[in-house]
Image 1 (spheres, rainbow, N blue to C red):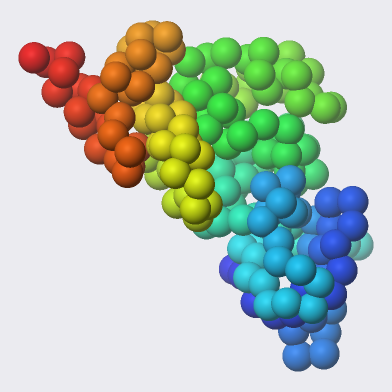
Image 2 (spheres, one colour):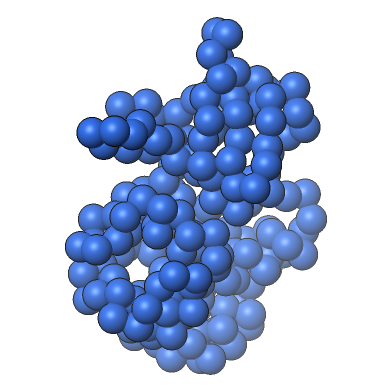
Length: 198
């Protein structure tokens, strides 16, 4: 199994990238978030990967982070969801949005992904709602934009708060109320829960 590939980015096009490692070019199908975070051509890149081995095919799927890869692995554990379908789901929506929809048992978000029907969306929710732990999927935000960092932290905090049974609108209100400029999602959640207790 190939856990990640680190090498020189040689090509990127239509959801696939080619990374050269030791004179070998690895063709990797990647998520939209992975594609958006790629460096320029001929620069070094590290992509977290899942290798799928079939009788007549060897495929590599790439992710921006270990968390995104972990969520992909959860998706393909669902009966009837293959690697390409899981990649489509991850490319259609932000991961926090998908996790929130699973926790809140809202199949419409996943059903809106290309090639995903209502039955498949409902099966994903049934099979994953008790396996998903929101804090496992909070991504480190690497942007230097303070507003973006704060918004991403609030979004992630809302996912965690709704998983604890708080309504989405109430969770958003609580998170915005307590969030300070450089707070992480964990800090926002802790302060929101403290306020509720008080």
